Length: 90
Image 1: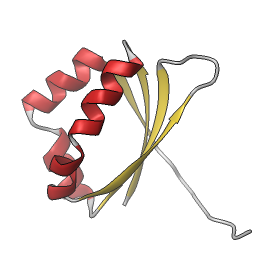
Image 2: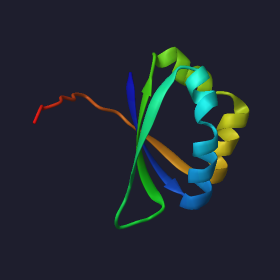
Image 3: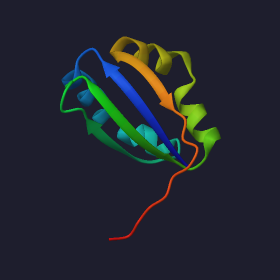
């Protein structure tokens, strides 16, 4: 399951360090990885494509109060709802 998230961060470098150190914990909870895309116009705006086993594992990881607090401290989060996606081979 893929989830696309837009974040407006307070400090990209601090956020990147925090996200990088939590990779093993995310993996244990069902994360298959994250792709990060940083805006060229605003260095504190990022788009994330998160890959999870299923919606339950994603919600179990992100819903606890301590995780929500950490997210709030680093910036705002908008989940982008996708109605259709496709992949084209080169």
